[in-house]
Length: 36
Length: 296
Image 1 (tube, rainbow over the protein chains, first blue to last red):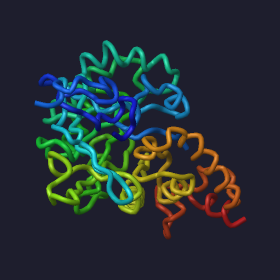
Image 2: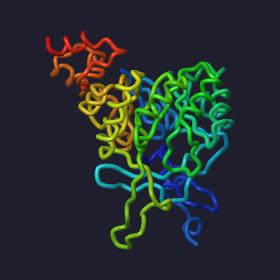
Image 3: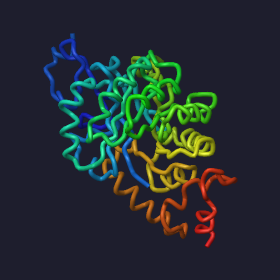
């Protein structure tokens, strides 16, 4: 994570088949959303 | 001299106070259609810099114009819109779309993203297409990863660019310490930060001598001293990029440090420093007074 507030798109993770920014959509997520 | 952000290194809507500390805000590159970007992981910290392979993630020009741009305008700072395409016509279309929007001060043509596969071949053709579509000031952002960046800059000038943004990132690779596998999924990414500074300085120096165009210098600028060096190499403005991630207060700090550097140098105004690193005065610029002001 570079910026931490949604600017850099560096912390992207795949959630439910879509690319999301962990800093904005997270940082706390349901485990099953990010791990198979 | 203006102080800007490098495209993609600042979100003005979530960090408006940082955007207001700049003389102009440069948007993340907008493309014709929405893009999710490349698969993660997309960033890796490396010695003296970072790698990114974001891949031009953005909402597309329609959403940008209808949703993002009106809110950016409320910041009260000039907006430079960075645009990127995948064929020459994309640039003309994007510029045409922005041409009649008074809130757009400048259009920056990103012709050099290292993180996408389909890059149009000719910078001259892209600039010509953009020039034909808008009367707004055009700045062309070039890659240093070319045999002769000054030659590319001259092609951009002939095609009608008003200025240059120098430089974009340059591809680098980082391997995982344990597995020896690439740390980015792409697997290479754009290198930015202090490691890029000497490369960027060389590009600014060469393009200033070759074109005389206004240059926004960027590439690892972290301090007032760094900014001063870019101006001496020929930049008339500078942009902060990677430093904004670790120091959001960098714009104010760099301004303060720059003032100190000028005082130490005994120069009255940064305009008198532009191009001072050149042994021979560029024929298109009156530099005698500038040199005199430094030695006095």
